[in-house]
Amino acid sequence: MASKLSLLDVLPRHERVDIGGDQKLDVFGISGEDIGRILDRWPDAFTQMAMSNSQPTQMDGGLLGALLAAGQRVSDGVSLLGNDEAESRARSLGVGDQMNILQAVGRCTFPEGVGPFLEALVLNSTLTEEAVQISVQVASKAQRTASPPTQKPSEQLNTHPSGN
Image (cartoon, rainbow, N blue to C red; front, side, top):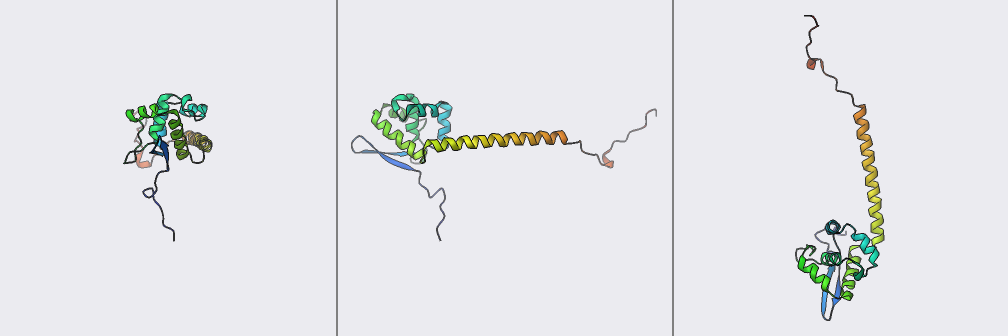
């Protein structure tokens, strides 16, 4: 019987990239949390990446540094995104090294390509929007058809006939 894996057993997807001479850099995929943090800083990040055709020279330098730093991990698994020194060093690498790292980050983040990821994202967004619309319709219909609760005889107020 095959053993079951847990998240604690799975190593993050990564590649080793040659960086000048004998140096090899471990490059990891970017997490959903880090993608969110990048989009907070650069709302047009996906547009920039698409328009750059993986050419670092066609991308905002700050975004490039952030992407490359997000593909790095410290010993506890946290990325270097937001680490000013790591992002600065990433921006100062040679363009060939930047391209190699960026491509490895892309392969590790989107193993099936960014196209299928974006298609799934749009599909999920559409399904979520439809679910919200249905929920709103159901809730508003329930509010319109709900009548006030009927009081039990013991809960009714004693009223005296007028004129007493």
